[in-house]
Image (cartoon, rainbow, N blue to C red):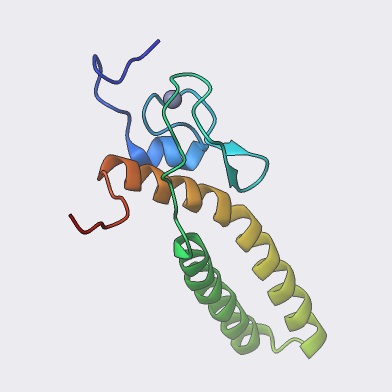
Length: 124
Ligand SMILES: [Zn+2]
């Protein structure tokens, strides 16, 4: 059951993008869309210390903003569409990209946190 001691952990990027446990790569990391489970259902790894805070939102905003602004500029200089087309394309692109990116990015940040053994700082 516990494969952590016998095999090296899987890549944090492959497990994070798929929303799997960073320790075993099999159990699910998420309960629902974005809530992290308390522990892995396959290997029992404790997920309670995982806290990606604003990290996923920052990366989602940066990537989505770059793509939406670039698309709007390209559309304007290429086709000069009316403003309602801009609003429709930019709005749906922003919402769609945000929803598509936030879960994989949260998974990757949690997996990287696990791989680097990052935790809350403490005074001794
Ligand atoms: Zn696991």
